[in-house]
Length: 200
Image (tube, rainbow, N blue to C red):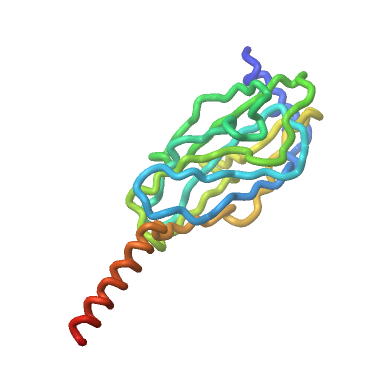
């Protein structure tokens, strides 16, 4: 049995023994505004609490009415609290036409020091192709799919769920690209100048 399977088995047995998972560190999101562009945009997930951990599992789901974006990547290593600790990252699991993304990461549980939960936990790549300014969608990290939550395995040997701020965790809004706003302003100014010249 590999290290990830052992960690997950240990976490499941601890959860069963405890009856329910305790709440770990708090998750927040970076900007909840995404540009009106076709293609991938990075959404950073931040964590605060400072607890030392040996593994984490992130489950993310997009929901809302109308056209939904797609999760195209989940990275728990690059630039995160696990970087620099020789982490092992599982393959990303994308389901439901990209509206659900899952991935886990673990480090050597005997390493000293261990990563602590303060900083960037993950970066999601979200493809907003087909969305328009003003469109909104929800991103949640709890009760994903069949009820999966985002969790950590602590250095103290406990399995804990993240406490995520907000319900349904975060609402994102598509906003016009800054270049589009600038171009619209220049076009309006040129139109006004042309009109003034005709009037004079």
